Each structure stands twice: as C-alpha cells, then as structure tokens.
Image (cartoon, rainbow, N blue to C red; front, side, top):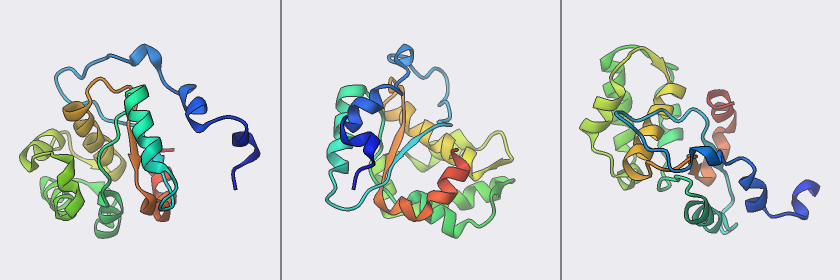
Length: 165
C-alpha cells in the first residue's frame, strides 16, 4: 500500500524535485568522480521497477547500471570495512568480478584496479562510491545522478544507509 503522501502524485514527479538541473550536461574531466550520494531502487519482483528505471534514464538522464549482486556479495565476503593495502584492494576487486552479473557493467578489471588503487586506505563506502563513479564516467558521463536498482538490496538496507546516509 502506498503512503498517503505518494497517492496523489507520481513518483516521477516527486523525483524531479531532487535533480540538480544546473549539473545536467556536466562531463567527467580527468578521472571518475566518486558517487557519494547514489539513490537506490529497492523493489519486489514484477512491481514496475524496470519501467521506473527506464523512465528515469530516458527522461532525466539518470545513470543506472545493469542489475548485479555486487554490493551484497562484497558486504558478505569482505567483513572488514577498511581497505588498507593493495592486497586488500585486489581481494575486493576479485570478489566483485566473481559476481556473474557484474560483467554486464562492462568495466575491465585493469581499469577498475587503476581507478581505485590510490589513495589508500579507504572504507567500503568509498570503494562503492569510486566504483559507481567509474561506471558513470565510462557509460553516462553527463548523468547528473546515479542510482542502483536491485530488489535483493533491501536485505542490506541498514548497511546501505550506513554507507550512503
């Protein structure tokens, strides 16, 4: 059931309020800028989330990568929040690339490692912010916002809110 506040206006109309229109058209220069404020579309199956994501991408220029299980996989397999050494970074990148659907992001491993290796140390939030920024720089450099769509991420909502309040 929809909250009362959303019954009389569409989600897309409400979303328009949050788009930084002055940033539309800005291009990534030099290196990928980390995404520190992504939004997440958490959903049930057959709920219209793909339609919503397509609308956002086509009509607002939002960047949304292909669905993957990379975030819960990293949270499960990489218990430490700190990535302190290049060995730690290689391990977390190996975990990312073992996730089958991450291949759909079309990011070469060497490019990911090169973009994330300096400066160390950083935490998982910074790791994901850099990874999201790399995808956006490569596939949607003009996108003013970055979002992630995956229903199973709802299971990790506390960790997500902790990383991206």
